[in-house]
Figure 1 (cartoon, rainbow, N blue to C red):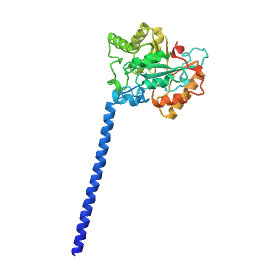
Figure 2 (figure 1 turned 90 degrees about the horizontal axis):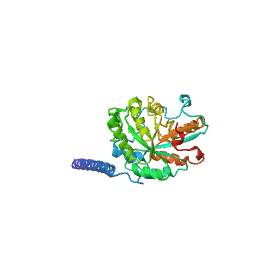
Figure 3 (figure 1 turned 90 degrees about the vertical axis):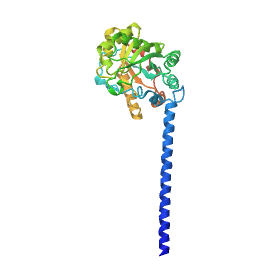
Figure 4 (figure 1 turned 135 degrees about the vertical axis):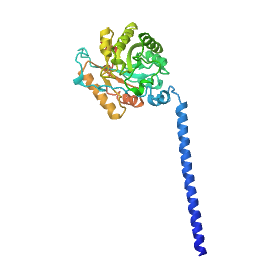
Length: 315
C-alpha cells in the first residue's frame, strides 16, 4: 500500500516538474520572438536610405513615408500594357522609326540603383520625385551622364487611402491658382536640369480640366514638355497639353505594374509589340530591385539604337 502511495507521489511530482519545464520553454520562446520583433522594429525605425545599402526602393522608403510613394499604381491605371485595338491611330506620326523611350519614375531615393540604371547599354530618361532625399544629387548624376531629367510631380489621386498621405509637393483640386503655381515651382526648384514633367499618381487631378490648364500654363512658362502617365482612363492631360501648344506624349506600357517575373515578361513582350506596330512607344518603370534585375538581364540581344530619350518621341 505504501509502495503504491509512493509511486503516486513520484508520478505527481514528475508531471508537475514536466509541466513547469514546458511552461518555461514556452516562455523562453515567447520572449525570444518578442526580442526579435523589437530588434526588427528598431532597425526599421533607425535605418535611413544610403547610396548603396539596398537596391529595392520599396524597402528603403516604406518605413519612412508610410506607403506614401511605395504603391505607385494605386490609381485606376487603365491598360497597363499596350493594346493595339485601343490605340488612337493619330497618336504617333508615321515616321516608321520603331523606337522606344524608357522612363524610370520615382528616382531620388537610391543613388546606387541610379548607377545601375545609368550602366544599362541603352538610353533611358529619369523622372525624379521632388521630395526625395537625393533629388538634387540624382538629377546632377543623370545630367552628367547625358540623360534627360524629368520632374515626377505628385498629383491628387482618387484613391482615398492616399489622399491624406502626400507630402508638401502635391498638387490637388482644392488649391487656388496661386497656391498651385507656388507648389509646382517649389517642386521644380528641388530638381535641377528638368526638361519635362509627368504625373506621380494623379488619377483625380489629371481628370480635372481646370487643374490641367494651370499645369500646362506652367509647363509653357518654364519651357517643359508633358508626359501623361495615364493613371486614369478619364485623364485629360494629353488632350490639354496638345491644346496648349507644348510638346507632349502619353505612356503606352507600364513595365512593373507587378514585379512578378511573369508579369514583367508579359509587359516587356507587350512593349516589343508596341514598338513593332508603331513608330514610337513610351514605357514607364521604377527602380525596384526586381525591375533592375530584369532590365539588366534583358539588355543582351536588343537593338540599342531602338532606345531613345523621351524628347525624341514628343509631338
